[in-house]
Every structure is written in C-alpha cells, then in structure tokens.
Image: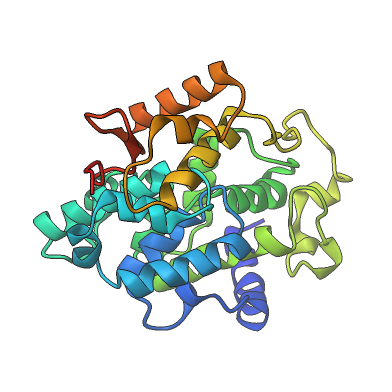
Length: 296
C-alpha cells in the first residue's frame, strides 16, 4: 500500500471531527504550543485544560515566566502530576528569554537544546507552531502507524529505528501538510484508534489497516494496566508539594511530617523532592518551594 493512500482520508476525517482545543486554534503561537506539549506528556487533555489556561494567562510569553520564580511555576502546576515539568518549562523560558530574544526557536536542533525538550516535543513544536516537516512520534501516532502499516496492536516501549523509518516514509513531503497529517494521526489515536477499545467502525482508514486484515492479533507488546497511585512515593510527594503550594512562607518540618504517617517513606519522598529541586530547605530547617526559602 502506498503511504499516500492514507493521507487524504485521514486529513478529511480530521477536518470534520477534530476536537476544539485552545492550542489548536489558528494563530496560536509557539510558546502556547510548547506549554501544551509539555503539559500533555502522560496527562489527559481534561486535566491539562484548566492548568494550561491559567498558565498562559499569567505567563503569555517566555519572558513573563522567566521573570517569575521557579517556585511560582511549581505552584501554578497544581495537581497536574510530574511537577519536574514545571521546573523544566521555567528553565526553558529563562533560556529562551536570554538566548532567543524571548521567542521560542524554530529549528529542531534549537528546540531540542531547551531544558526538558526531547525528540517528540521538539518535533511537535517545529511542526505545529512553524509548519515544518518533522517526524512527530507520540504514543498515539505510533499506535496508528503500527496498526495500519505493520499490523501490530501496540508499539514497543521505545521508538525503534524501523518505526522512525516508517514514519519518515509516510510523512507528506510538504511542511504544512506534514504537520496536518501528524496532528490528524495523533487525534485518530487519541479518540478512535485507542489502545484498549478501538472504534474501527468509525475509522476513516480501517479499510487500509493491516492489523484489521490480520484479525486484530494481540501480539506480545501489549502494555500492562495503569500503575497504582494510592500509597506510593508519588502520592507522598504530591501531599508534600500540595502543602507547600498552599503556603506563602516556608513550612516548619513538623508540619510537613504530619501529612504522611509512614516516616521512612516520607523521608524518601522528601529526599527525592529536594534532589529534584522541587523543594528547598531553609537554614532553620523549614521547607519551601524553590526561590521561596526565606522567612517572613
């Protein structure tokens, strides 16, 4: 099957069925797209939307965030999860402000050099903000390509060389069309060609799908169920951060200790927060968000 056979059906489907999301609106600048891509990593759209709106309202451009503290970035991140992303966005804003005149750079190499920006995010910003031809490989795109062209249920954990070659071959040559194709494949994977309950009857390219022709083989690369959260170090870290986000002054250690009863786990979680730079300790032993470790 020629790769071009899937282009028009999928692009037409996307035009008629795409969700209305703020970072997809015409004229959305590269900063907002970068913020959305970082927030959407391992996080559902429904959880991202309110945090995204508050974030770009307060910091509509990188210099605004760069002038604020890293602690405020962590505070605004709220309960979005994986809060190191907030620190990385702040560090990226500082670098953009200092080295790129406050504008998000356009090339993949420059984007890749920003703190916390990996291959996927750099390609996504280059494609969606600047309409460049870039191979955008998130889990949804990988699933769609794997099912349609390779006949496998779900992608491996890491991107393989074969996957990247396939994505490059399938990608349209024209930059704007390639960007539209990438976001359309991403949308299809998010709402139709899902991991656990694909809706093949609603898929515009189901007639071209190798996985469907093969009878939907499960394969040996199915992902396990979601990780539990209750009682984990992640939950403990979240409790500590929630306490500190709610205070404008450093919090005494005994108050922090009260949020989690299991001392060894609490100490382990706190040590990891300190090591990650998400929490700092004052000279008096109190705890605070970064850049906020001063008594008042």
